[in-house]
Length: 116
Length: 117
Image 1 (tube, each protein chain N blue to C red):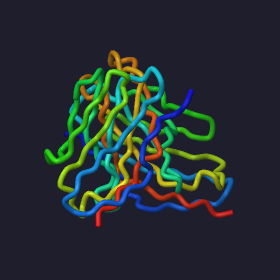
Image 2 (image 1 turned 60 degrees about the horizontal axis):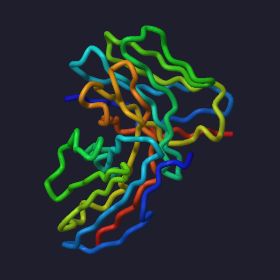
Image 3 (image 1 turned 180 degrees about the vertical axis):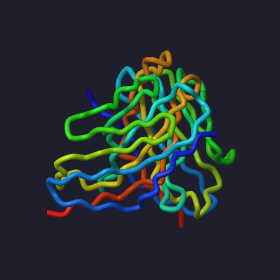
Image 4 (image 1 turned 90 degrees about the horizontal axis):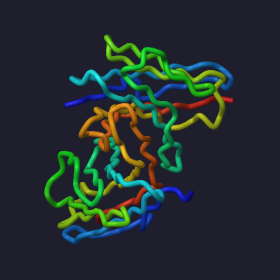
């Protein structure tokens, strides 16, 4: 079974600065997918970024980038130039692919506060 | 395209009752997944339906069931409600996972907030 661990229940950052959210996972698959989702107070889950395990290059989406360390089973999210709108709960998630395509395993979440 | 819709948005039930939640996926999406979100247990996978068949199932008791219709709309049912079933229930749809190299993003609905008294 897959497990996803987010060891930081809460993080804070000053506006315009950079913050990194940590995530580790455990899986027996060699091919899988990793995601960061954002959940603002509205509770609407929004995909921030995704990484295919077979790709060595770290994914980037504008101010969001990941540091994917496959051997260490680590998948951190870096938010650059933080904005007030980045304040939310962030979830790291794993998908095993194959017959488990529709199943995401989530971490416990990290609450990100952005200070003006 | 319209996003994933869930109805109702809020629901209050009493212990022992049953409840049905509905999810309409994005047009053309064939896979619908359901998740339960609680402060204590976090986000947990309930089940996934694809082409009217349950393809994956999480570790929930048999009181939790679901189905998918030919238009891909899905419902989940919880029978004999317990206080611990109070949660935000999220539905997500994806186009068609296809092969391992063509994963499709799950798009989430706004959720149904269920309160069991």
